[in-house]
Length: 266
Image (cartoon, rainbow, N blue to C red; front, side):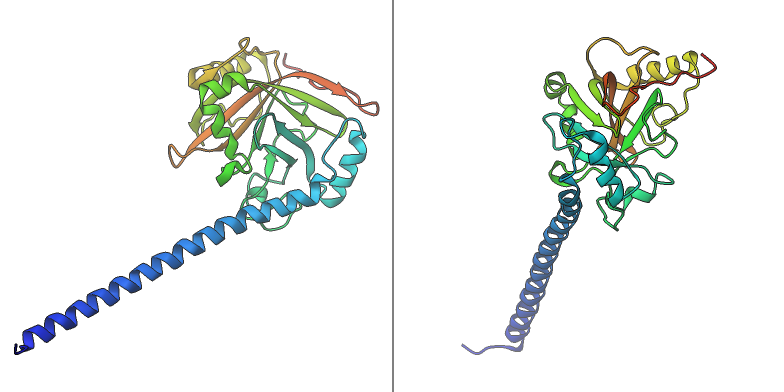
């Protein structure tokens, strides 16, 4: 059979198409490999900082002030350690000069894309405010504040209700009260200064209007609260927020035990 020029043209085009497809496939494979490596590097970086500090994770039996003196020697911005039971949330808390500093720095102060768990810069680092906000990135595999997603499941939320914040002079026992999905610019949830009872009533109203799940006795203006916040996959500016009340403060022997400072306006 005589092969025509059209045959060779078609054959050549087939080879070109197959070659281009092979190149695209290899590029996709390389990109997927890079993405996996990049994700692993991010998680590994944050874990390395934690491994350095976890030796001095606060322990009431050993004495809180000793542990914190070691942690603060590594980074004076360390002001606490948060643990939420039955999750992977078990991290030092830092506080920067603003709320951008620790978005891309680990708890040792080194550059790290996974950032740190940090206290809002307007809050008192001694955790004496009536309302405080902790923030952290939503990372894969539940790292940082990624495990806040678990509380979106009502069964998990109702069964897993406790946590702790360790401080240099005392331990704050946490009890979960509400889980919300809010806008990153919510003027209530991310407001820090609540000077009097009537203003705090507005905050509580907002919490219960926005809540997906609630539990326990309803929060009151006498409760001291901590909000844990991270990004939500439901929208660009969406945030998951877990509201906890402080139900008990156990002071160490060297601590004052004072938790809540009343304002003059009350």
